[in-house]
Length: 215
Image 1 (cartoon, one colour):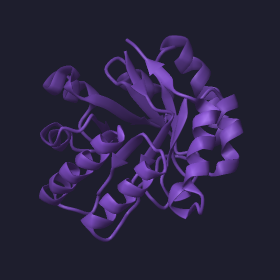
Image 2 (cartoon, rainbow, N blue to C red; image 1 turned 90 degrees about the horizontal axis):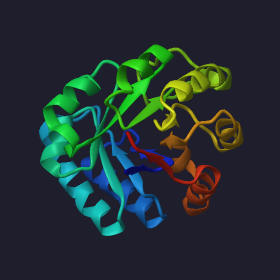
Image 3 (cartoon, helix red, strand yellow; image 1 turned 60 degrees about the vertical axis):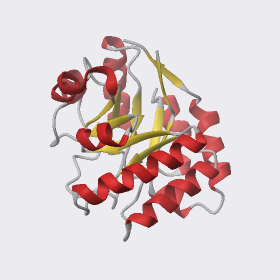
Image 4 (cartoon, rainbow, N blue to C red; image 1 turned 45 degrees about the horizontal axis):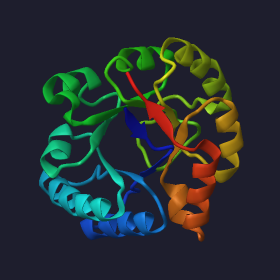
């Protein structure tokens, strides 16, 4: 059984590799336990070096480290897993290559996306809830209504597959997302802008708690 945390912190777009490590350090110090290292504007060699540093920080705090987009970097750096978007290498191909050595998260925007990824993914990032400046080339906005339509069908087919809300989430969304049967949230800007990150992290943990995924 693998525990998928209910709070996924996605690193925002930052200027320097050290900024990413500082952000992860601050998140871990505030009590966060799951971080996705996302460095879209950097070459792979820089991402790999940063991933090694991020892994050291995460190990000290008992935090899971997920690498965005690059399964080979996740594997080389000793990260816990990889998260792939709809235009990246498929979850199926990654599972065939790395077996159970990596947790696999997959982005979805529709029920069909979930059906494709679910047989091999450990969790789904479903969204976006609303517009977010963190990501370019956004898929269609789902809103709460979209979650309410998709999640019951997904839970009926894959009841143990955690579904994490992604994209433009604000603090006031938490009760509605919980009511829509989301298992957690992925946040970036919300945490960066918070003056009380420890309180925010605790609120999210208390709202969703941990979710278990077992195939």
